[in-house]
Image (cartoon, rainbow, N blue to C red; front, side, top):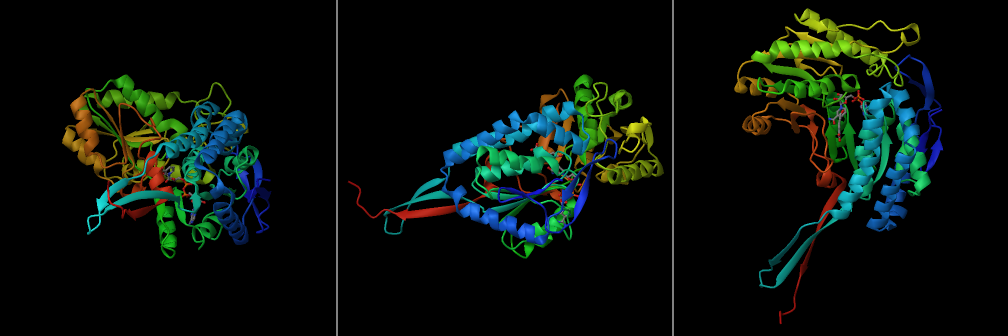
Length: 489
Ligand code: NAD
Ligand code: 6OD
């Protein structure tokens, strides 16, 4: 049974209910998960408040950071355990999780401990009306008890991307992991206890959204801030719920991200980028590419090469050395993605690769498998080219001019990420600057520096995290103004 982690202890939820944690590779049961009741969320909030005002607040900054470095080291030491848990929950290739998810889980503690140790606050020396000097300086205080609501696609990476900076800033947290992927958040409790993080600093409550732990947590009157990653619709519901208590929110939401390939691009670089941005993690990355605009002279070449990549991907178990492509997260998500595969046909799209469910051996037949898919023939304004699918698929659409490409790329309510492929350095800067997104990559994709601002525009979110921007969300600035009355000598 996967348990809630409250006040430093693993506990069964008082709902008396449990739900299934399913392995998407074969539909088998990994574990039962104990669902938190409202009373458990109340307990977690009380524990987090006690720790916030007690042992956590009593630590000096350097001591707090040392504990976070120890958390990172312990995640590294237990990498195999985290890997096993993450891979079972998501079905993703072990190779991917071992290079991306688990090391980022550790880095998210290390980097933000570094950031808080090195950040300065502003100081101004001004003058009062009588001409005496006035010294102003800012203090950063933790925001308080922070609710962290997480999705299932990169569970440890995205959870620690919030928990790392929140704790580094002196907050305490209550995490609500996705019901699809509860394991690594629960395991992290062991790490917290092992390295001596005071009880109540890190708490985990399991359950669903409405009528369950997600709602109980985000509507709780005694939390101080909510940081959320997930669907735009869910984000909107949480913003509505949070408005009653006027809680600060950070929202990292959905995307419908474009890649723009100019005819002068190095097509090997393009293919390396698109292979990852369309298909990695079975397309379940918020930053992933689902719209590929290609300048007409290289359109056919890109379509053919991308279709070939899609055909070569080999679905299979996470630890199968011959496989490099996992299932979708669940049968339910598979049905959603397949509904878009049908819609693409209805909208006149041609699947030049994929378009359905792959034949799998009998031991994998109950998994949430899907074919990597490339469409041509879809209009830019078709639903398939406008709505977030969150699957391993893209529409490839030709363009002629740079201004047309910019109009197409920006013509979306979302604004999370984009990638541009060109060898023309002037165009690279010009085009990247004109994209209405939180992050624009040139000749690459998902290359992250955690000191930089990260977030989305429009329907892709509110706020920026990363580096000092995380501090803006996880701390409250107080200004101290001191009038200096003495005469200068
Ligand atoms: P989701 O919105 O369905 O669920 C996210 C979390 O919210 C889950 O823990 C869920 O239980 C909880 N939840 C659902 N309804 C709730 C409610 N009413 N109140 C409180 N909590 C609630 O998202 P998902 O399906 O888990 O993840 C996929 C989505 O996340 C995609 O849209 C993807 O683009 C987005 N995403 C965005 C980013 C980003 O950085 N912008 C990163 C990863 C994923
Ligand atoms: O790299 C990150 O910090 C981040 N938030 C990535 C989001 C990926 C979305 O699936």
